[in-house]
Image (cartoon, rainbow, N blue to C red):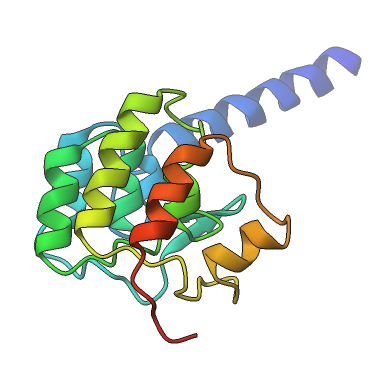
Amino acid sequence: MKSFAIFILLAISISCANAASKQKCTDDDLQSCKTCDDVAHATVGRNPNPADPFSIHGTLWTPIFAAYFHNCQGLGRDLIKAGANPSIGGWFGSMSITVSNRWPHNNRQINQQWADMLILSGVSVDEKTSWGSTSRDMVANGEQEIQYPDIWQQILKSSKISPR
């Protein structure tokens, strides 16, 4: 009986693993994208600011964040040219907070390149995220920490003010 139960649990775990590996990269599930080409195929020609982006574990999977996550800088520029909001996406819905922290790249140079792109695109720390707060407020209130304070300061200084 015990070996039968182990067999059933093993079969269920294999079935779940197979189902998870079959997830397709789509504009509804950008987290399943594995490469820049995947992100491009899932996002190019579609709304760069989806009304209901995929959110999991405090991360808002917008097309611009998916491009950032895989460090697809050319695609990021293309999405911004197509109208992607440079302020919304990533950790707690804030691209400003996202590029001012180590995750997922743990590479200050990559984050600086993205911060420069966002700054040139008019990123705002005063735009409300889907969590109802602004990036500026989340940092000022201690809700979010900043691991690259110099990048955060550059974004703060250049940030255009948006209505709250």
